[in-house]
Length: 215
Length: 215
Image 1 (cartoon, one colour):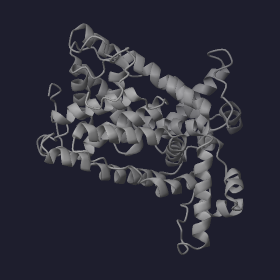
Image 2 (tube, chains in turn blue, purple):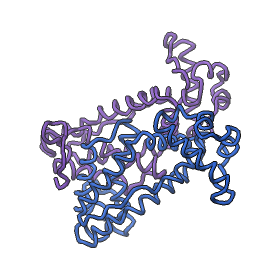
Image 3 (spheres, chains in turn yellow, green):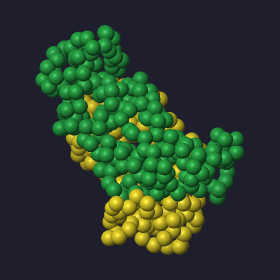
Image 4 (cartoon, one colour):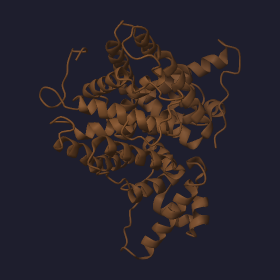
């Protein structure tokens, strides 16, 4: 429905870049105070000092602004490296929890999913951003394999997805805060599953597993 | 932003009920063929034979229709009862996978999350629907406790959330299909975590666990 927002088509550091920075900063501030539902182009114009017609021309909708915000803020998860797999998992899970418990980040993700539902091109942007972030932190699992803490052949991306999934389920489906207990159960369930080889694909290495519910 | 849609305010079986049934059936059919983004009140009117102004008066938006659709279709997960915990988990996970791999159900959920982002009252409807569904299938974990397969004090809701979370993460965040491999890893990780007592809250029974990352 919406057209793809043109991303920083003019030279960096120029007026276009300054306008973009002002509007994205304004969006982040608004989403730190109120819901995504309350975000309007008029409010963005008021806070950023950029004329609403300029914002509308560039991003079309508030969803367009939020998608652009993701491009700016999606690589903020540090990769723990404590030398201990369980401690790494705990630090990573706590970082994801802290990030998603911040109102503005929660609002950005909810806005993104709304945008993805309305525009299939946004789906690919969301997917790519999360896959990229997941790739970075798979280092945790790969190092645990090297140290012999978890088995050879462990699919590192499955480990990270197993760790993060309960947090997103709590946030998006059960619509509650990510508390200490959930961080604990996510870490422990993932840790034990990884240790016992659940994330090592069987057979042809693609994880086929047919007609054997008993494992 | 949108007003709450009035749910079946006239007598059941009357014209209001027939209109609602026709529009909800039309929505389900449309979402089985195309994305939520493609759903419009005009398309609903065309397919249902109900005038677009009637639809707009009653539901306001396509999000309103989808929220009403949830109320109609949210209790469709059967609770497995095979006498074996792992087999129950496998059947339940497969049922959730099949449900969410159906395009129309995937579209309904994506539409609901979009609606929740735009209207905080929808959040509560989404939350309540999933909590209710989760409550029903917690029987699996409670029976496993009774049979002695998993420890006394296991928090059954945590078991079900751990099982379902990776499927929703795949669907909503990684935007991919729920495949056989994911069903397997979700079941095994949850099974092993439940067996080893991860879902038994420590201490005061509220799952407090402070400053002890080593467990």
